[in-house]
Image 1: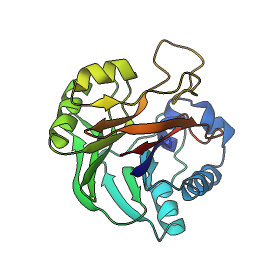
Image 2: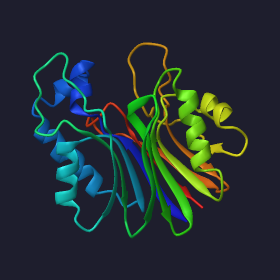
Image 3: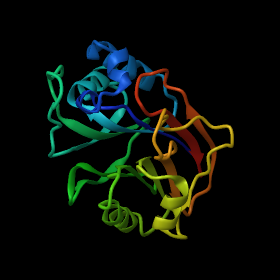
Length: 233
């Protein structure tokens, strides 16, 4: 049995570029970074996958959690401020897996046609765990194909922001994969006040493993995504 969590913590440059209300709620990014770190430090899951981790956020996490094992994908694309002045010391962006214990890193690769999205894979006691952030446009098909290739043999867990609803993701991945269902009364993983895009785009996906206890937790305005946790195996 493995407990897992996945959370897109929202890179500040993306928040500012898209005029996210989260940026307005946290005018001092250092305060939000500290609050995100405190929230992550309080997690008890064996594996925590994080998307959109800024360089400042990563440094704060490492400083606060020296006992946790970090696996990191450094994206070659560094987000560029388009609307507001930069407030970060380190604008780099990362995909991160935190492990309570020890795991062997298998892969850390940006996707071919989007250097700001990618996949990070580890082997934890014979189970392949992949954290991913998938592009929200037509490039998704090639990226999901790459994820299928990475997880083609043996039991696997995929965690991340797939930018797609559960039904479409299940159809795209195929019958070898199970995309966990959310409870009927679940909070959305990506709350929205308007638009037609799905509010359930962060998922726990398994191959040859059962999953239960899927829960979406309110992050109290720390990010534009809520946290998803589950029990696998």
